Length: 498
Image 1 (tube, one colour):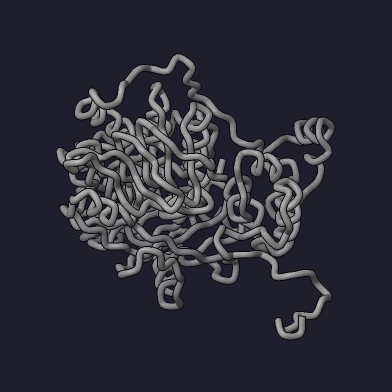
Image 2 (cartoon, rainbow, N blue to C red):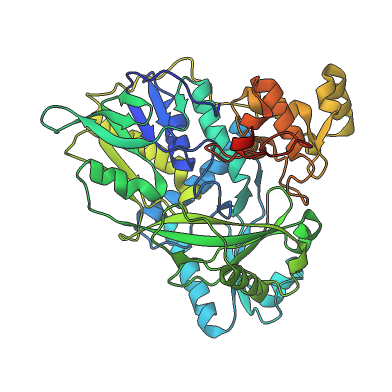
């Protein structure tokens, strides 16, 4: 799935970007007989903000009533509770708490509660600090009250993004990896789009959907629309070992500020502990570095909620870049000129939650504005379900034994930290993984305590064997990120001596 299709051509719809927004739109449009292509510049999916986020499915109380965020978030929440079963990705119904310290923050909880009621959020209740600590005994003693939202949930964001695009491809959509948009194609009067020019040639279609994350304003300007600006905003995170994942069993927020929802603490869908993010506006759209000050801020902020978090149990850090937009709200619009161009921009938190609802809305926009250009004929062959690769770590011993008997590769453990088998890695490659990072996103080798120290050589070996290429050609995440430089026990001689 993550290898790119070699031939381009003519389509009904082109989607630029395969984060959660592009993937959900592709899946929604694959219900119809239209021909769809998704153009993604990265070598593995998800890559941008859909890869590096808190994985929260928000309840819908944070956003100003009447805003696009308030419209799509509660609906997206309800959709995820159904879709995770239909598309087989992990969702844990943990619920969330927004924690207040003192009267001022308690007043803000009441505001959030009222917003939630107006937005249609469900399962909300303001509880005392004592009630919070009965459920979350490791939380800070000076938390005086909390807003509980039962419908809050956590997903495996990698699996969710992959599930949507995997199902879209099952239903006929094409995915082109390592394909970056460098221009738009127009008719002679530039009144309508006709496609996208890329590093891999021209793709032609009368509808182009711009879902390119932090690059949406750049792509939009290619269409002549400069009505919004994206301010890339970096957030830094820690992930902790599974052994401390049980310190919390819910998603914990601080009271939000102008910068965002603040540092959060959560038990992840895969039983780790996650803290973050910070919020630092930056010029670069691709700077995903972590910094000592940023990580210190993350840790200090998390310990305001859960004082006993042990820093020495962190297994990795990372950062993501959010598409903060100067309008302050999601920007979803079909342009009048050039006709056929649709912006889906500024999809930051609660963007992951809102994505399936946004996808339905984009389909409605197309039907209303471009129904004469693309036909919305239901595809009788549409299959709404897909299955993820079996998660060996979660299977009962009887099922493990059955699988190992059917194929010995199920009995070969590649990653001891996450109990990932050779059969899982092989299936990830069969579904399109072409890099070490892509295999990690599909089936989790390298996500445990050793962070790939033991399993990465085996993953490289299996990729090399299954793809029929030299181990020296295997990369971590595409480009020149090669895993190996040569064979061991051979001297590296200068070129003049070779």
